Amino acid sequence: MRARESVRAMLDRLPDDVSIQRILYHVYVMACIEEGDRDVREGRVIPHEQVMQELQDRWVSRFGRDASSGPDSRDGS
Image (cartoon, rainbow, N blue to C red; front, side, top):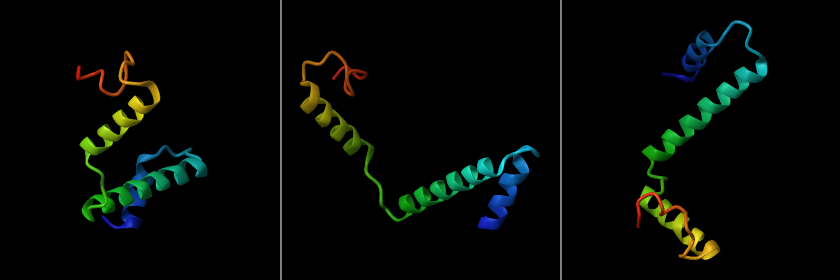
């Protein structure tokens, strides 16, 4: 769907009394989603496992391995 068609479809879904600010917000969100989709198609992504490992490494460096909760506490590892 082309940009104009996407915006028209979005406007049709919004209430008649929607503010300009709310419309601009929805257009902004649509643009961000489109940019993210383009990043995925072009391979500009970070694997989930890498993100989780980086978060765990940050947690450990900040709080230590003995912290009672953290990014790794959900799966019991």
